[in-house]
Length: 169
Image (cartoon, rainbow, N blue to C red):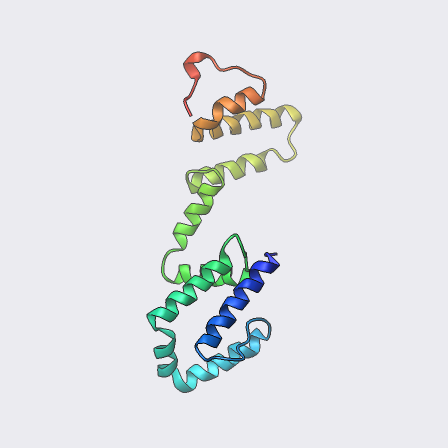
């Protein structure tokens, strides 16, 4: 999935930071169920100490930086991505990620994205003529949402724009 060198670099960074704090022998990969069970036991026995140690601002910043790096395009670690999304949901920021994702697909709103999906689904099993008509309707909607792409799209299809319809972009 992700970049093996990036993962190794992230592991080395975490290992170096752990050793700098005097923590040796930390498990970075594998045995997640065992580690989760040990963490639950530790919290059950010493919740106040865990809260005090884990909520230090410097540790929280380091932890967030590690998750962000792991979830970045450079690494794309699935565990970091999932943890980051869970945290964003818990702090009420999941909507921002959803909006950015919708925009990255070229849609300005969730409704517009739904329209794109419906247009694509409606073409399944249709005649060639109906498919072409639906494609044209899709392009009209797309060019209205992305006017800077109109000129290049129409030229690519072999058409010409009348001067009155030329959109600057």
